[in-house]
Length: 113
Image (cartoon, rainbow, N blue to C red; front, side, top):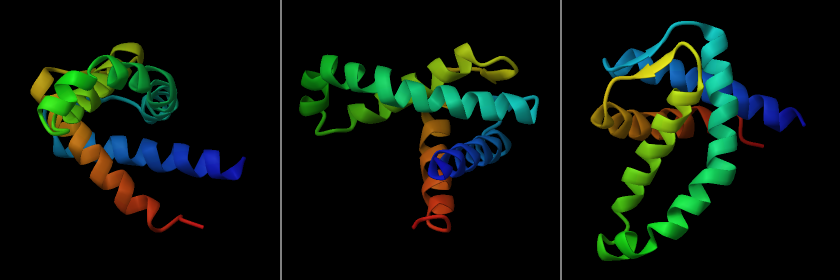
């Protein structure tokens, strides 16, 4: 159970860093980043596999590059359902998802068992 909270905190911090680096992404409160991190976990567990399944032909034709679009759509969906968390456009969501994955991966290195 403690690994869940560590992942939640790391994702919330990663979202704050992403909002600082990408100008089109705004997170107004720390609570919004924690709510966004929680919703991000739900979206990655439920919605993302369904999107990957439906977009499998496009993913195969693009040699996997379409997964970046799927990640951007999931990130944009998180912002839609999270209060005080706004993404102004698709490209901000696209680059934000990339930055979020890099920052989250970097921070997870310090908390890996």
